Length: 225
Image 1 (cartoon, one colour):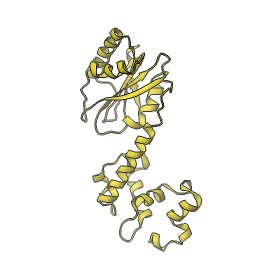
Image 2 (tube, one colour):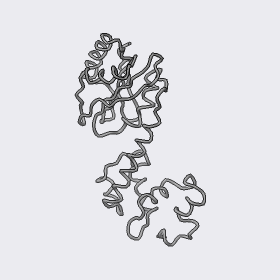
Image 3 (cartoon, one colour):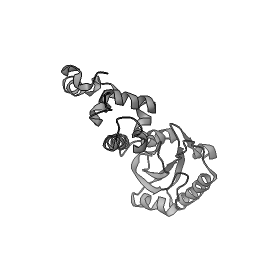
């Protein structure tokens, strides 16, 4: 197999990035620049092609744990950590595309803005979107982080940051690490409590969405509010 050092200089990923820009490179070549090396007698690009085949593409690779990555020949501790860091940076960048003033008209708008930060996590996260009188985003607050099957949330924890933000409405969301977005009985009960609290405080709860793997369910739509 031809190693990267044996390629003509103008065909090497680093030189091609400098000449043509990163969009000219394949996924495997870009990953090769991140890990900086590969399996013995294989090379970085071939190793990254193996990673992509094994995980079925970039989305699953970005969600992989370091120990899973290290099962691929040529990926040790340092390279696994580099790939895990790359996946986390991609998620944080996607989350930062949510801007103050963005309209949140319905559950689809909310899901589109929260998908990157709530999908395919190993633990449950519970967040609340603070909205103004025109249902535009003021801010997003992480309220709680739980385990693989549940997260404990109290209404006061949800509404305290909403009151400070002078929110006129709210939308809450959490994820199911199982990938199945079907709401549980606890999810339905919590939604009822939050709606009641919101009515008393004058900050109506517009919806509660449950995020799964590339899908979501709206408890508001299920409950008819």
